[in-house]
Image 1 (cartoon, rainbow, N blue to C red):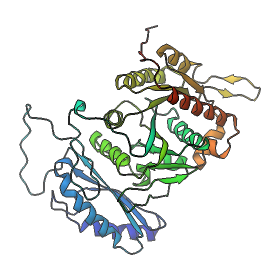
Image 2 (image 1 turned 90 degrees about the horizontal axis):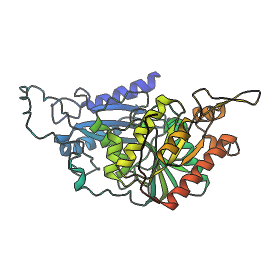
Image 3 (image 1 turned 60 degrees about the vertical axis):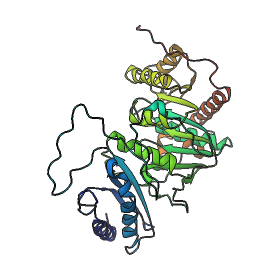
Image 4 (image 1 turned 180 degrees about the vertical axis):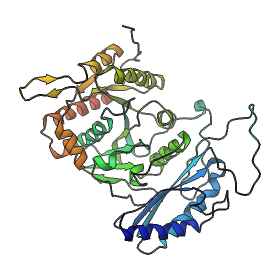
Length: 400
């Protein structure tokens, strides 16, 4: 970090410390409320303000005061602050320790989502059956790209599919919901970009390659570890769905985090997904998680558009294919589950290099063989959306 940036961040930190935390009475920095403080070359500042759910309403003016404090510093051209609420408040300063909760007491309220200038949203612990999933205003279709297991190239597939949809003429959005390891900023070449805020207080998605995108990586320092409890992550997810100016879109692609955890369940409760695509590699250790992912989507009544096999083979100089991770495992798993197999992608250096460079292969080299496969996968997914669920898919797996 150069001295100028270090001095600027130090000044902003001092200004934020002057804003008092209503729970502890300490400055926001000393109270540990400020996370991911960053300032880009254009003078735009971003950070997250972590608040306990029980006091969430009290932190709306605190967030506003923190924004004003940061904006008052020399060289700051704009401030983006995200308020996340969680259910594990820190003990108040100079106060006696609270007694342990009764084992028969009701569980604490879950994460809350706050919009700028509003009070607390209903607690996430409300019974799921009492909620009616709502769509995102102005968004026609929403699909999820999931992997169930990390390290299989899901984000690369998601970004390239979004670019393929855009190239096919659809108004396309991409929401990176992997709050612990956001990849979209790098894959779209937007690692140093920061979103602006509209007059209504909503964030304006960034545009690249015809895709409007949002990621927690645009708001906080992507190099800083996101040590968030589950409710904090789901609170951030709700904000990126509800407090972003997505409309109008024909399709919104959600890049889900690996696994089948809190974020996935939040989505099932919050929005009606039109379909899900599962990405896997061929080996059994990945396919076991795919089967769990298929079960999860079936139980949450999300139509499965199909399975994509990534890193399926390596093309060798003599023209043969080397199946490094096994052969055809994802196809067999899809057939066994009775869901479509959308296609297989090889291990391709161009696909890797384009992602590292921030120029998705589908956009930078649409005639590349891997790009053509991705276009075919996108077209097959769109056809599945148009058909809709013809029958109720029953996921069954044998033991052999």
